[in-house]
Image 1 (cartoon, rainbow, N blue to C red):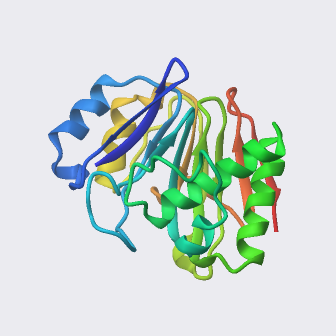
Image 2 (tube, one colour):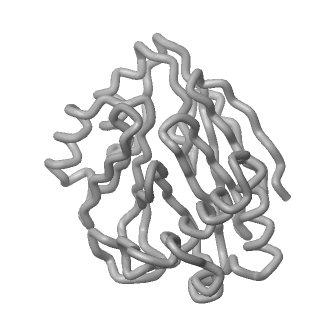
Length: 226
């Protein structure tokens, strides 16, 4: 059970190395928490021990991050400088190192997040730092970013715009329980997922190398980074 959200721009993380469908804590959080942004993670580990600390999402300062894939941890680690090479919350595993590298590029380059993500992605791929997928979801509490990059169809990424009044018929129990209690049938929403969660709605796929940006007012834009 792994979920991140924002309360008045303050990031919060709850994660336990257990199945969300069997987690009383997940159901409790789903009912209690109110936020404009949620990042829920339901995936299998590709490296590192299965533990609370190694579970996604990860948080640093105002940022929350979740990753699908595997990157070359040691090569990226060697590129990190203080403070991004300190105080990891995981072992650190490759995904948190990847997260710190992106933030280091954002901090180093300036305040243009989209430009800095592009530079981080290009540096990582050009230097052979990706061994499989590099998909991620990233948020600063205001905007939500989704990036797709992978060498197989296992690293897909989709998004869906949902207008008020539509009923969500997902067959994915863990995520459906979160969406149901947030009553998205009564709210406009944008959902990003690694696979289509419903069969009767217009899920849009991201192209390989494409960045999705969702602003506070749910304006959507896409940029090809590669």
